[in-house]
Length: 317
Image (tube, rainbow, N blue to C red; front, side, top):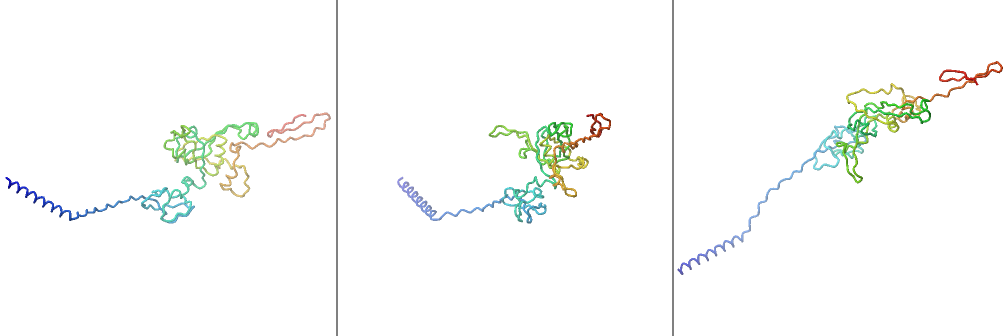
């Protein structure tokens, strides 16, 4: 029994020595270097941006062939990706080739949308005179106006001296294009309300911007200040328009002395008076009074011949 115990102890001691030697050998060898994983390339997405294909001079409309779309790693503020949004607009300064075309470098798109001879004019509106606020940019409207009779503007009504002798309603402008209706930022919800530090405020549209011929801006301004405008929505395919030449030339406030037909700016500078807009007749000249010599009959009363509206009569005196 004692021998078995000694043998077992020897075996355990030998195993311990072997394990110690094995551990010593492992400690002497450095662990293998970790295998480096291949780096995954990160692809940054590219953004299409409209750039100038050539130098774009200031003050000249940009043709579509002078633009191209180029993918860029970053999208500059104010850039666009559609060439049609830039074509036709006018640079405020020269734009170098191969540079992004930014909105801040261009004239207002509203100004670029005007045809030659047109002006953008804002008019006051409400739901009563603007088709119940159902207008939108791009619609066409007829502009009517009303004037109330004025009995105290320089004379008595019926004498021809009042600026507005008759209450009237007339067509002022045919087929005016609506450029802006209300606030474009709130156009999607024109009848909503907003809350501010001053309480709840209505966002109902209060103004409309119309494209108006230069020669009719005076009439529109005067009709708006002295009367009431009414915007009547019309079908864009309806080409029926009034003929201003059917009513003859308007004198204007200032007399044009230049020979030939004045241009539109000169006609606009001549202005329009309220009585002209209202169609009032020019004041009649003073009635001439003709003194007739008395007859040769002694003691007979003399008389005065008075002409009223082309009719002559003798009044005793």
